[in-house]
Length: 167
Image (cartoon, rainbow, N blue to C red):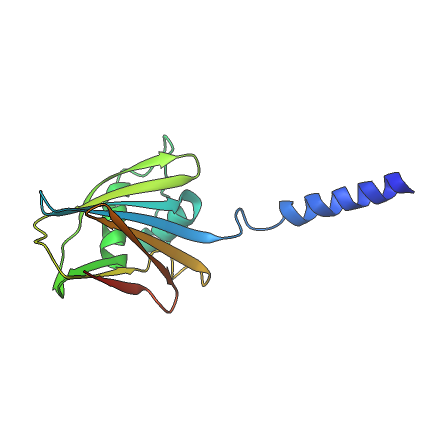
């Protein structure tokens, strides 16, 4: 009887984890560093590769295949356009232009690198990040912002895609 119970419980555990989503949470993490000396913002955006690929394919109508030998040759263009549509930065209410640098694929995550140049010292920064909000209602985007060795964070979600820091 005990063997049957253990087998049943083990089967339930395997079944309940095997047929669910690839991951149970939808999250991106964006790190932003303000470099006062060079007057720039350096950003890295970490996104689950499978989700990001779906978003890029939906937008481009192409098979992207992120991080593979068969990756679409225009992937960087599609990523640049996607990031420009889903990330906005305002410093003291002035719109900043993001410059896509490139990406890295590591395990199940894609890291996108962005820089914003000519950012004079500011008193307020507003960050909008709607990455993957059009795909997942449960998508969360965490923003970590560093300036003068001080770190502040935002927790963004569908319905609240923006947040600000005042210095």
